Image (cartoon, rainbow, N blue to C red; front, side, top):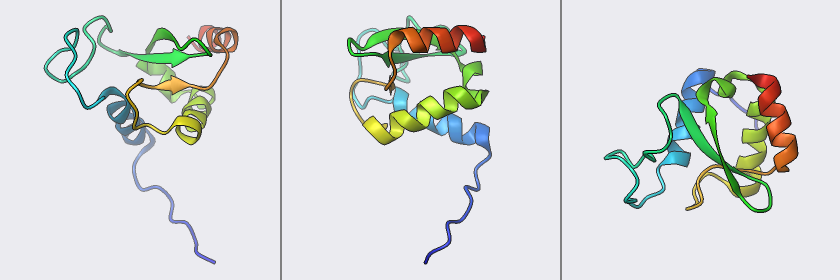
Length: 105
């Protein structure tokens, strides 16, 4: 039986890696800057897509430090992975997502 080595990256570095993977969609968009980040997303925020209709939400990066939000990210990675054209998709109902994010702010 193999023993898993603990992740050597600090938690913030790991979260930055996740965001970078989610933000780089592989192709240049007209409404993106030279780093391919959307122009309508303010600094210190990122976009996520939530629910069946994939509604877009802009959330502050500070949410990444909350264990509840990290749980959503793990679920997103398990269900969708981080290498797809849609961006960061959260497997959660919109009502639940809005409720969670309003409590965390």
